[in-house]
Length: 317
Image (tube, rainbow, N blue to C red):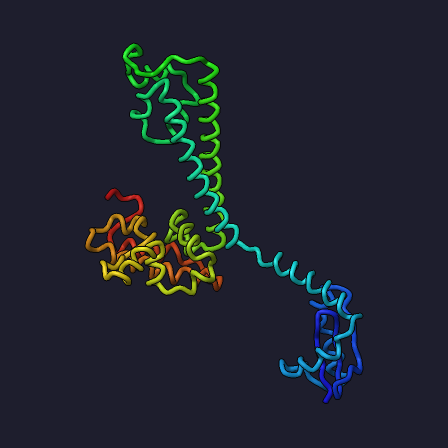
């Protein structure tokens, strides 16, 4: 029986366990665009493409050293092409989210060091300014005298030491680098918002940038998130509490990352589980619309949720 086999290195026509005709592919481009050549061979020999069982018959026929190097080279090229083509918006979003998390960790660590360091000359500033970014900005841009006036502290009563300008310069350099980290984080967030609006607009309209990014961090891809049921989306981020419930019988969690959603936050405590479920239901639908490239309905879905629970994003709690 005559059979046509398509491989990475070319077409092989076999009959009675012998190769009776073959064509070679010079590159992966030939392999990807081999449709015309394949049709010619099928028509010429009045046959069909080999089935999965018939493909096994070709293997002993091409166990020749002259094919080995060609097979190896083509397999390496194909693997490289597949890796190259596998990179998409999912990877960009996940990497951006991971980098934002690492920037937060790094900035927090350095701010703690800056607070401890600068407290040697002005300990009152540590208690007077709680925002880390604002603290770094004040240290970087103002002198000790200016800060004392702003804090309304008597310079003579301050417990801070008088140290050389050279030493203070090092503290200011650290503060400037911390500010650079915060600026980089802001740019990452702007980029993340832009890419999510383009890639998953419906999901972004309901979840927002921060919550959407955290859900992506857990789901790893739009496809995987779209495959998850609403109940799983609702509990993403609450895995420890869920396993504790399963293991010890403690109270089951009602929400995970969605706890920070503005609709859940504005709901009464007893209603938060119900609101989180409704948000998760809509997110599940939005993810599937985005995955299958459907029309934009996110804004309407978000407004319907707001009307249902009587809250809006800009309303005060």
